[in-house]
Amino acid sequence: MAARSADAGAIVAAVLAGTAVAGPAAGGLLAAALTVPHLVGPLAGRLLDARRRPGPVLAAAFAWYAVFVVLAAVLLPVTVAGAALALAGAGCAGPLVTGGLSSRLAGIVQTEGRAQRRGHALDALTYGVSATIGPAAVAVAATTMSPSGALAGTALLLTVAAVVVLWLPSGRERRFARCVGQRSASARGPRPLRRTTIATIGSAAALAAAPVIATAFAAQRGSDPAAAAVLMSLYGAGGLVASVVLVARPLTGDPERLVRVGVAFAGAALLLPLLALPMPQAGTAIGGVAFALIGAASSALLAATLAARTEYSPARARPPASSRPSPG
Image (cartoon, rainbow, N blue to C red; front, side, top):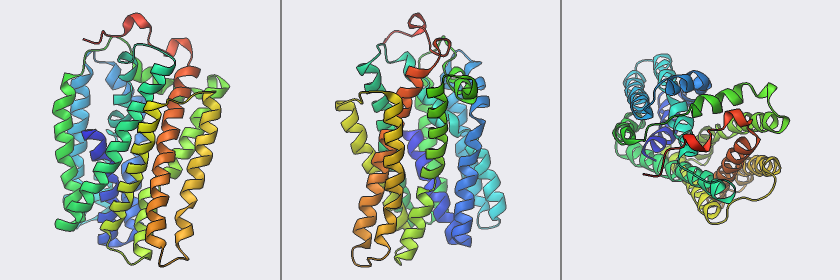
């Protein structure tokens, strides 16, 4: 949660800081610079698989991320391009903050079926908590200090995460590279897995625009820029509530159908902020509800895609039961 709170907060802080220095276009550029390098996921997976102990690799990735977000905060007042390059460097560690941690789930959840889907929902829950805490912390820091200071402050959470992650148990199976390799080779995989991968990429690209939409929405309402971080906290809160519900009542039914429903729900939710534009008096309330629904849709879609990847993966991409470490 510490690492993912930093990641969620850094994206919002980057948008706010860039907008404060050079306008919304700069904010969008910095957000893209931080998120696009997640495409190096397969290479990051190979690095993680090369070591028996995942903790030191993940700790080094978190420290790398922390150093580069601080560098971006320092460079931003001087050069937006330099800050974008620094954030691109930080983003290269992003896959280990997200998929790298999720890859350890297979060794922790010992059973399949309902219990496995509850584990996926718990993993999605960490995103919901983080997407609430990260932007909320950025809103406070941006108000009390500055957006650039809030961006640099995310390094503190990453430092905490780098220490805690050292205690992860050793693994015996190449989980992350197999998982990412399965995605990158989806054209050769089962058709449901291929369609799930396409849906994941498309929905991720759309949902990644949420911080930029929040910033533009706040500006259109004449609100303080930190209001965008509050909207993103509501986004996280919606995801958190949805994750708690899914932990109590895991998803059931065909995974691919669940993914299709999740994509449709997320797409509809992203359109909701538009409803607030012609309503000056109720705009803020509608915007808050809209972003909470976007977060709920994102969380449900994440749980559905995790279930689909697990159930449609070829047998060779799944860690055998004998390779899973014991709960102790």
